[in-house]
Length: 589
Image 1 (cartoon, rainbow, N blue to C red):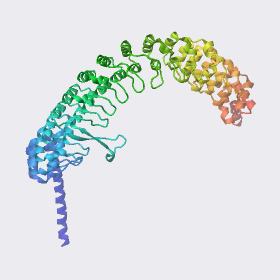
Image 2 (tube, rainbow, N blue to C red; image 1 turned 90 degrees about the vertical axis):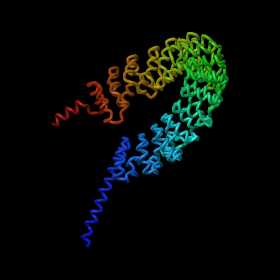
Image 3 (tube, helix red, strand yellow; image 1 turned 30 degrees about the vertical axis):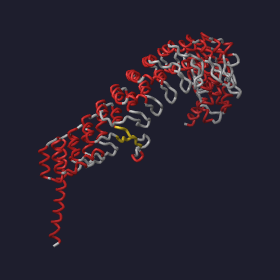
Image 4 (cartoon, rainbow, N blue to C red; image 1 turned 90 degrees about the horizontal axis):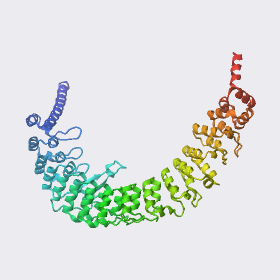
């Protein structure tokens, strides 16, 4: 009996397998027919395999209703919902309903049909907490938005903001954005107009910066949307964000001249408003270096001498921006020019000197020569201490040569500061214009020592090129040749110093080392070869002996010497020279 039943069991399993395969094939065919909108094929497939209407795709778990809604095929959708109306609320793997797909792809007729079946879909959120209205606004589908508005007067949307430091959804931060704000953010003018037609729509502060839709539109340069928002709520121009900025400040900061004019015409008094940092609209314009916007503000009677919490005026900001045209405009409009320090303890003239704006330096000094008398407090540094451009150095010294000889409270001259900051071109310009006796007397040792400490070759080259006599100066660490070898500077620069003063090879420093000792200690083959011609056999041998730590270490170095010197040195040190080793091997063979 068991033998008779076994074939039936296998036959049953085989029948089930075939059925599953057929269903899979039919469901794929059904989804494809929904993509293409083939109504007759959909009917035929459902007639042959009714169960496939509930089948989901393997990847995103989409039903045939999702597919039909996504591709906008109304007849197919009607056919599917007539057979299985419950699929209208089916969710994909991302929690998206058919309404999400229809709204995202702009199928307003499909949206209408779906909502007629289930108005509750309006509030359905996907895994990113987005509703169908959210998706329609993002994509700019105004007809879909109009359809959704008919069913839902509540335009509040919850928008997802990812935490940049954590991809885990459980730790994501959320903020609420209204439909209007979202439409402005995406720049969809038609949708903004559509939403504003509803008198119940509010235009308040929304994001984490407490910006309104008007702030956003002004910052984004959306002229028509700004006009729509002002027409709907005129007082929006006076609303401040968390920084105390108005929409006017945002427009200036982004450089949108047309919107600045639009906002000033709408609310002229905003030209005098300052934010939490006491920055006026003119501060913002000056920081951008925008002459056109500054002219608009000045024409609207903006105060030119308002200072922010750092005691900086619009002129300070204009100087920082490097805009010579704007500085000229403010000076022509009688902007107050003083040597008062700002919040960063730098007088006004120091700003363009440090930034390298030579034209602005010239303009300020021509307008107010007294600015050159400014000094930092308490350091007592003058403008030349901050110079980064040779042209400005020449400019300042032509007006007051004594600046170069001044020293701050720490005894540092402008030349010392330039060397310290590796401003080689400035160093060269200062040296070319200074009087050696006045500038270097008693201080050259410090300047040279600093240059070697910085190990900056261009600065050292500038010093030697302009003052060749420096080659004979002896520092604590020795002659310049000692210093360049110890500082690990380039072979080319060391060679240049060597050519300028070859006799330095005989000089010893406080540690009783000659430059040749240093070359041996560092294993500088090229330096050893360069200097050996200036030394006697005894001097070379003695240096090798004094620096020796092991035969193995110094044999390769010594053998870089010329052949006759090598023999003498090796004999003096008790080393076996290369020639003797070759001869010994020949005898052994």
